[in-house]
Each structure stands twice: as structure tokens, then as C-alpha cells.
Amino acid sequence: MKKLLSAVLSMILITTLFVGCGSKTNKNAKELEINKDKVLRVWSFTDELKKPLEYFEKKYGIKTELTIIPTENYASKIQPVLESGVGAPDVFTAEIAWVKQWIDLPYWENLSEDPYNADEWEKDYVPYVFNLGKDSNGNVKALSWQATPGGFIYKRWIARKVWGNDDPAFVGEKLSSMENFFKAAEELKKAGYKIVPDEGAIRWFAKGSDPKPWVNEKNELQLTQAQIDFMDYQKKLRENEYTAMAPEWSPAWFASMQGPVPFNAGWDKLDKVKSDKKVEVFGYVMPTWGLHYVIKPNAKDTAGDWGLTSGPSPYFWGGTWIGVYSGSDNKGAAWEFVKMMTHDEEFLNWWYQETGDLLSYKPVTDKVKDTASDKFLKGQNHYQFFLKEAEKINPNIVTKYDQGIDNIWGNVVSEYVNGKKTKEQAINEFYKQVKNAYPEIITPLDKQ
Image (cartoon, rainbow, N blue to C red; front, side, top):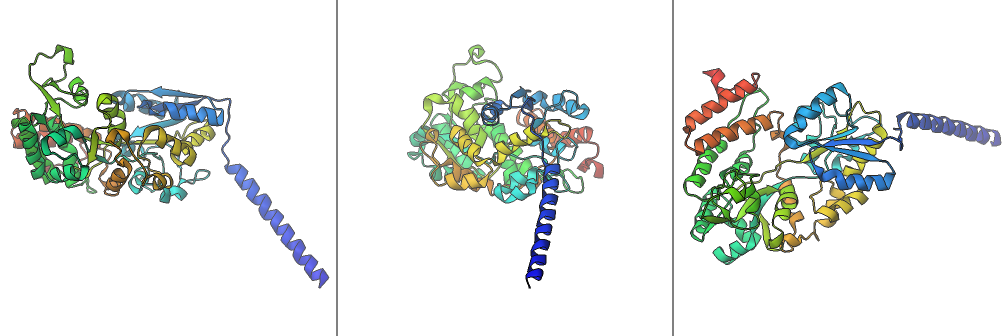
């Protein structure tokens, strides 16, 4: 019996040693080397990574270098570098407009494989955010720390003056359909206010009212009835002077967040605008980042008297995805930074406190969503609102063509609104321009 027991114990010991050695060897083979003497190079189109990189340097003792390329030049600057590998970054980001263009190209490391195994994290994220980072084979190529559902961000004092009520639920009901939206616009106009800064602001509601991708699985262009209807909605806003005619991203657009601006200032600097008529804008169709990085910095004097509510339909806008460059020789440090940005609870808690940004990482959002409060919004819980809106997002409507087709559509709608084209002419021009830009897409012109 003793001999049998001894033999069994010996076998267990040998097996354990064998398995242990095998596991150790495999683990070492899969580990990424972190060289603290190398500088981690990061490229992005936004400066929002500045503070996270400072945090990373202190935590890991690794020097970093951030290269910021303006959004309008980002794709044209970074893509040739990623192709050649010469001077390429170790980590790079992509805005939602580029994610689908790059996700199936060999630029980002496959994070579904060892030693990354990012697939195991899926349950930790807002679903649409995680899914948008997957390629056509279901491999995770990029991750994001944020979710970007949208809302209607408004000036409470105007709501009180016009309607005697600034509560988000009340204002949301005022904007709950396009019919109600125009009733509210008329009431605001009579009181001397403009409902939105420009006609293009409502384009996001068009996407949300009938969410379909621009190009379907058959590679056919899809112009929905909602998009066509919103051509008339935008024209109605113009004809009735319901907006300030302050184009998005123009000096007047930014200035309107703080107070009255000259009506129809166009793209001129405000000190060059000759206009005796000044108007004040009621609200803005903006996503999560629009609240924190656009409105707050430009409305400091009115902080604490803003509100957040829903419009006629849910929508989402933008977002930043991040991944490891497949040709990097510093993947260990690169992966540590990507992990910190997207899956490090300590960092993400700090980032939430620092920015109020809506995180995509649910272990943190679950802890803060019931107690979140934004002083700028008069103490309103923006987290609960945005998280509910995020649940309505369908990632399947995002395509690699979105940025180009959005621009084409926006331009032809502007020509219609400005009276340069009839609706039919604008739509036909849209089909022609899409076909010229993307010959592989089937448009209604191909079926004539």
C-alpha cells in the first residue's frame, strides 16, 4: 500500500512539474517585453491623451511622445506612415469615421490573439463601442474608453423665461417629435430666441429617426425617407429664421454658447461682422464630448444653468478608438498604455473624476451612474441620461463610407436649403457625386 501510495504521489509530482514547466514556458513565450528605455510614440488627432500620457509616465516610468495631427489632415498624414512603417507610432487612435476604413487593414495588432486576449473583456463594455472595434472576422483591433451618445444641451434660463419651466423632462417633451420641435422653435422665436445655431444641427436626428447604413450588404446606396424629410425640415428652419445662421465650428457658433451673436455672421470673425441684429441660441445638438470639450469651455460665465435632455430621436456622434500598431517594436509598452486607457479601473476612475467623460467600461460606470452629478448642468445626472441613450445605439449603421457620404449629403442639402437646387436636383447630384467618389457603390442611377 505504501509503495502504491508512493508511486501515485511520485506520478502526481512528475505530472505537476511537467505541467508547471510547460505552462511557464508557454507563458514566457507569450509575454510582451516592456523596454523602459524606449520612448512610447503615440499619434492622435486630439489632445485628450496629454493627461493620460502624463499619468502613464508616472505609473510606469516610461517616457512618451504625443504627436497631434489636426483632424482634417490626420488620415492623409498617418496612412502612408502606417503603410511604410517608417517613423510610425507605437500606438495610434482613430475617430469613428476612420475606424471602419482601417479595421480590416493590417495597421492595428490583432488584440484577440495571445498575449492580448481582449475578447475576454467584451462583457465589460458598452456593446456598440466594443463591437465597432472588431474587424469583419470578429477580431478585436481597437478599443475605446468612451461612449458618445448624443442629446440636446440647452440654456435653462431661456426655458424658464419662455415656458416657466427648465426641467429636462419638460423640455424633452417640448422636443419629442419634429412637430413639437417646430412648435417650440416658433415659441422661442416669438420670445426673441433661436432654437439651434444652424440648420445642419438637426442632421443627427435624421440619422436617429431611421437608423440605416448609407451602404447595405448588397453595396447599394440607401437614402432613407427620413433623410429626404429632413431636407425640408432644414429648409423650414431657414425660411422661418428659427436659427442664428451660425455655421457649426464658426466663430459665431462658439460665441453663441456664451451669449448673443450677430445674426447670419457666416464664417467671418465676429469683430468683422457688420450687423445690428443680435440673437441668442437656446440649445445645441451635441454628444458627450460636445458637452465637456466644446460647450463648457465656451460657456464658463453661465456654468450651472444648463440642462441636458433628449430630442426627437436618439443618435451618436464621434468617439476615439485606440490600438497597437502592428509594426511597432515596442508592443509591450504600447499594450500597457492601451490597457490603461481602456481597462484600468484605477485610471478610469481618475479619468471620470477629471473629465466627467462617459466611459464605455461598465465596472466603473455601474459604480458612479447613480451618484453622478454635473455642476455645469445644475447638478443633473448626465451619466444616467447618456447611458440610457447609449443602449439605443446600433453599431451596424456605421460603414467605411460614412465620412465621405456624409460630406456629400451635407453639401447637396445646403444647396437645396440655400435655393441653389431643387430637391430633385439635389438628390440626383448626391447620387452622381457618390458614384464618382465610390464607383463600386450601386446608386439609383445605375438602375435607370
